[in-house]
Length: 255
Ligand code: PGA
Image (cartoon, rainbow, N blue to C red; front, side):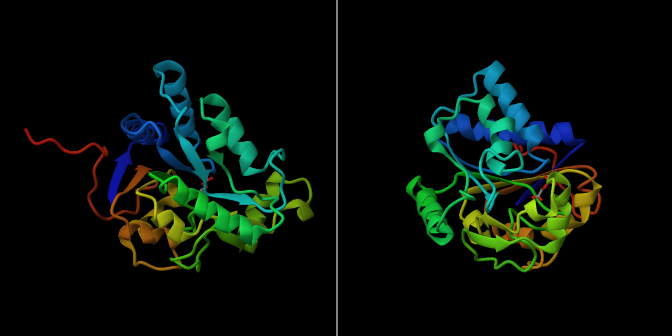
């Protein structure tokens, strides 16, 4: 695991985008795992800029999103389909046939989850998975207590998560109760992980994930076991770390 500390949100977003662009240039048919949430927005903005002004080409890329609410149609402005469309997909030249976001309206959710796992495998697995982290250490909708070997499945949202989400919906009854999420095991199968975190609100979760014990109560702590994980954080999110870390993912060259 490589922990990279940048001065602020803008610099961490650019550093993360540089890593994604590097992998994409090396493998034009990259299989890219995507995350929603406010933290990757700067990364998506920078990738969109690189596409527009530097010709970064997504035409051969396949994407798999981590999660989606159950019972919310893709046209709903709080669906993760909508989020991705507005913040990334519409800005780049991805082939819509190779974009995958879990189907929250699937009639048979279990069957869908098995299909999603098989579909990831059929593309040779995810090359690089982008991740955010919850202040409680969750990754995707794998809340504390999630099995560290879990696969794509339906999860009940915790009361705390539903309360947090209430502000985005007109009525209480509209707040989703369930989500489809890649499991911790699914995420760990990605060849590389790129976790981004910003702000003091994430400092404890980052400390626990990077330096704390490996525990299902902090699902993100599993990344300590991944062979190729990058954790890019700003100074605030790094404020509780005790180790010494670097400021770039690029290999050190000794002259
Ligand atoms: P955030 O969410 O980026 O909006 O803080 C991250 C997460 O909960 O995974």
